[in-house]
Image 1 (spheres, rainbow, N blue to C red):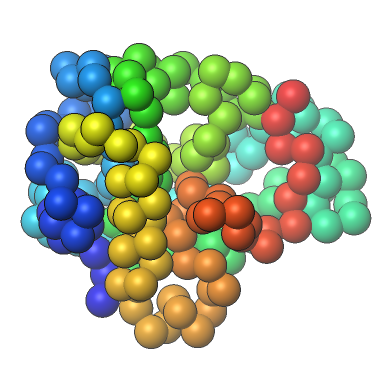
Image 2: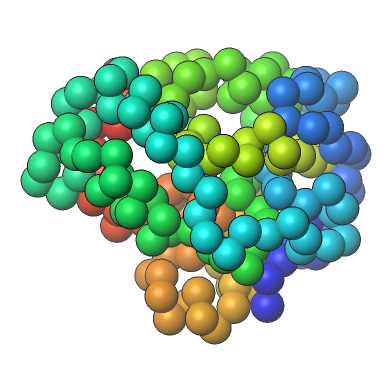
Length: 196
């Protein structure tokens, strides 16, 4: 069963502190977790997209930024091939796109906003989210946690366990779209050299 923000936070025994639209820094600056979602309601798995809303113009910029990117054995794949591969990891019945953690939540989220796709710093994690044409329509939820890495794991693990049976059959590691690994296990996406 697809997850809501509130359900995942309950599993991890965390309390939602707030939510901001993508691009706006959260007021909360301390240790915690943050969740990027299509939904504007923490109690609803709403505003989902049945097909991956991939922005081909962003993919073109990404490939220009990282011309040595590989898809399987092909260096510098076509935008269509890249879009097709990313779309295979889209979860059409989920609104949660990424789960992250930091000792300094406000600072880390701001780094996430300003890191262009194809750059390895200051926030490389979750860079697939930058391929979406609905990015500016997403929301950033945040919660306090004294142990953010542990909380991030609990949230991601709960998400994986709650995905629909259709998603379980289709994906080996059904993390949120922009999360690429869980406890050392990585999505088998075939992409390498994704950042410079």
